[in-house]
Length: 423
Length: 163
Image (cartoon, rainbow over all chains, first blue to last red; front, side, top):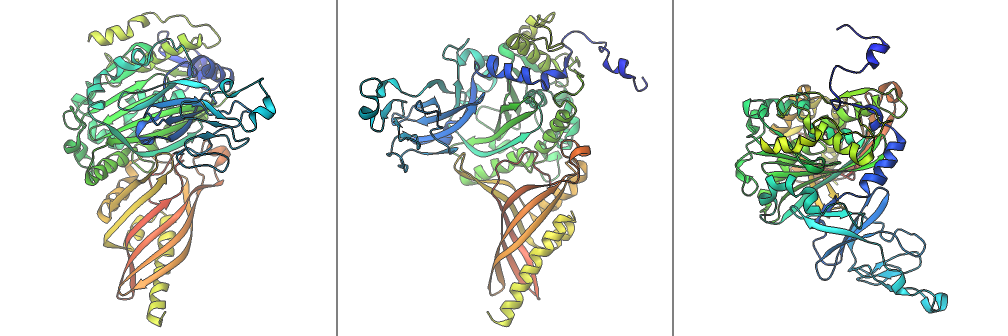
């Protein structure tokens, strides 16, 4: 077909409902605000890994949907999460990304979370244990028992990741939320303790869902020279995209031939427990979390949407806690050769989604973004994204195809997970 | 420092600055030409987030040769990286020398978010220090080790190129 005029360009494509989305879902400020309120404040978010706070009184800070959060490990070794907000005058209690409360602070004592502003102190269970000049200021009208921190639902699960939910009464438990999607790697991830060895982050001008789309669809492997030479074979094209309840997708494994890329090596000797050599599993958790196991190294991406057209992506790399120094170094090299900030693939992925972000900037003309490849739910089928946007529509109550309209179920969508599971 | 030591230190500084020019100009083989066969390269950082020293990229001279030879096969951001290097210290001992330099790397945008708007702009990309080790031989200073210790953990699109 020759290049199209405007009416041809904006006409609906000859595909079925659900096989394309409207780009306003990637660029509209109102939709972004709804996503924070209706979605991110109610789902389980993997905020960090337990190895980032290995000792009692260690802490880590993060945020979900603009709400600052602190994760602490108590003297009882329990990991707990709280809003990182002082109940007095709203100061952020801990400003550093990580550290230990074993050390005293200028305004407070060791083993306490201390708000530097007015020296209110909290223990590792979130109890307020000190209000400066409490009796003089509040007499008997307000006491420490009235001003504990806001506790948050928090669990350590699926390989030691720390999961937080801002909703006190989430629709489903963490096990119900993600357990079935993790089943393919549960034995592997839970065989022994894992440890984070890599962290970096990107803030890029694109919508968070476009990053998750890139993690969900493998058709873009044409962009990666590395993946073409190490992966494109019959087993690769037979990999299945399996849909799970709650919008999650798992991409099945195959054997990667790393040595086909000059200078790279097989990862067989350092495969994670219970896995055959050089396997590659991918778990894409709705609405923006990715667990990617390539033989010897596990990568985890988490998104924090910052605006309709801006996202913070945090990248972690993990190995086994018991690694020898030599084993750890090998895992680091394997991880970073493709996934590090100077690696072969990650840079290409980020260039790709920034290019999408540029054409879908807020207030730009709405476009149709195609998710219509049908290949028997194999690797270049776009069923993963179709499954995702069906779930997104349910949560936001907007049609992904026309976000000015309320959500209506896509014909056959209810069977996404069931069909995949049956195959 | 005696005259020979001063000459050696001067040669070390010269080699560091020549490396900066070669890297700026993306003349990867000129850069590697300043490196000994035993050369080892690493980009490292400390992460307060996970409380660990990290290695973001590393390789032998042979591995770096392979890496740069593959660059034309990879998609990349075309924006130029421009380094400003200041050599802080040079210590010469026999036929070896070590040097510490500070650097900033600016990205002179070509691609950016939208090249129509952003191309031509320079923005800060990285800060850090080079920790270099040299072999002194026949009046030449050759890199045998370079650790590029960057302050950044936020790297946005990242890069395919040596820093």
